[in-house]
Length: 247
Ligand code: ADE
Image 1 (spheres, rainbow, N blue to C red):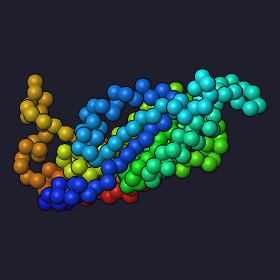
Image 2: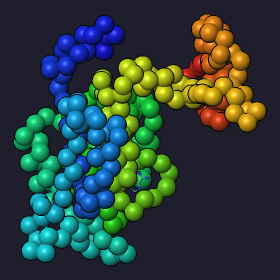
Image 3: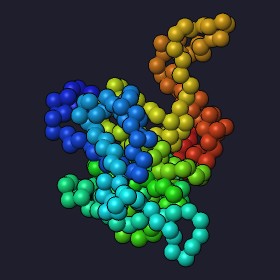
Image 4: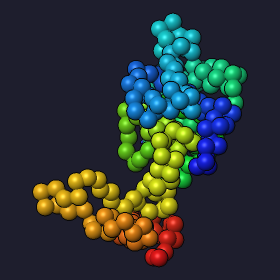
């Protein structure tokens, strides 16, 4: 959005991004979307998050969502039918840019992926449970598989919350300061430089002089150097990928 008020003037033309989360344990996500930035984004009418109980689409008399794996082995597998019915019902009501399955062996979420997803419009996020879903869900119903890290969670709900947060905060107008999402760590291939606020000195711990100098060019140069140095120390892999150079 521009910084001369156009965003406000055309706010009514913006399409609301809608995220539908399909879960076997929807209660896990109850509080998540009713707080802070995500709550504000929904109140401002910029995003909608709907958490659905997959059992509502189960035709089983006990509303079961899982069954034993063919071929034997430990653990249960989520069946195709309720997931298919849920996704079909949602897709009949509106268009979705992606139908995402959260799973440990998906593509690793990073900032470029979050940026890309924030431009996709509506999203369906399917949370796995138990051993995961029947493979035919992955073959026929899903457009993308996403992992939030190389570790196994008990379900996809936390991952769905992470993806939703990373996406929603990028939508125009969600963050108070329009530039703040752009200055996030990773947006320019670097981690963020350190921030300080008042007091300028606390128990002898001082804020770097340059930040108090009022000299914006020096401050910008210092921040860039700090970001480079921190990236070198903490995420050296990013420097290779982004090809970021010293100024
Ligand atoms: N479900 C279980 N573990 C997960 C992970 N690491 N990322 C996304 N979904 C998951």
